[in-house]
Image (cartoon, rainbow, N blue to C red; front, side):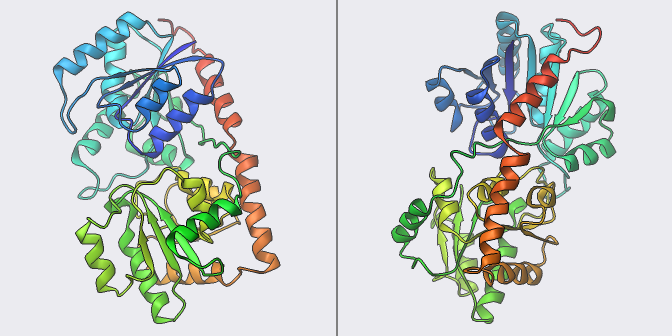
Length: 379
């Protein structure tokens, strides 16, 4: 089948990464990708792999009539067997335009959980609410990446009968234990091989709640047990004065490494003892947890989205915004290092991802959903 994917953007995000992996790994179908904005990070990589990418170049936060017209014409010209959209704005704009262009087989993609007024973008909340009203007429199916996302959106008014959950899948040959790569990163940063270290791979955004993690580190420093912390992601640079000021105010400068965006995430995961995710809302199926666990790196995470389902009994889950609980969980796991229990925890972390969240399982479920044509649904 020819699958046309429509996504809001192709930057360095979780949904974008899943779309990239899906297109690169799926051999049963032909994939074409449309970005409402620019090519971002993944557009050039997809193009180099022979996958067609079409960018509408809409400005962030604005709807372009010319862009919508170009999308309508592109769909009419390419005549895909079905259209798979990703994230609220693409669900709304891509889904409606696809139907207007004569494509009846439209699949929406939900990659988020709760939307918080005052913290989530107003345009995102607006798009989600309209999608809830249109969910009974535009999409054939609505694919959620997490059970929590399905429940939250069902409560928002989305058509529960059209929703199904397909968890993210991971290439465990790329994300795997690699002590050599981990030691190389530590040597680069000047961190001793036996020094305790944690990491957090996330862009700088209020949703990711770096503040609570920094407060937890300050608590551990007061206890004389502060580990080194690698912060990785877009916006985590020395030029970020707000972050720098907060780190300095908490007297954490010697403990926190601001590494910005990195391409060697598997090596980062191997360089740290545990991965800590302090997100406060909005997460559905956090990729970083599964990526860390696939590398044999246990996780501490806040109770958002499907974090507890991903980690199972291999990691620790704490309430959002609770720096004391986060500090206790970090300390608890780090105290296990160099024990038999620690090695067992590392092995179980990787085994859980391999068993439940393999790339093969995700591809099979997407293909099964796409091929299970609903009665009366034709192009």
